Length: 116
Image: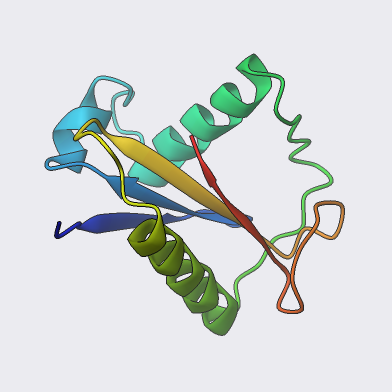
């Protein structure tokens, strides 16, 4: 199965979205004149809080702008998706946290890949 992943870089995570038409899927969540990154960030934070997975305190979160770390996060996500392909064609959101020491992470500061 060939899978296309659309990436959204947040300042603290990389989000990968598997969907045939990402723009249309996100358009129902998007507010007027809102950048797509803001829409995705709002969705991710809401999802994590709603399911009591994590509380994201935006005042204490570490920002990561290192392109090398972001690319490693994307690569880690791609490897995970290749070894754990989605069973159905519903939209899938994946997240890798970047440079968040309060979460378990590898030597590069990347968390595990989480499917939302």
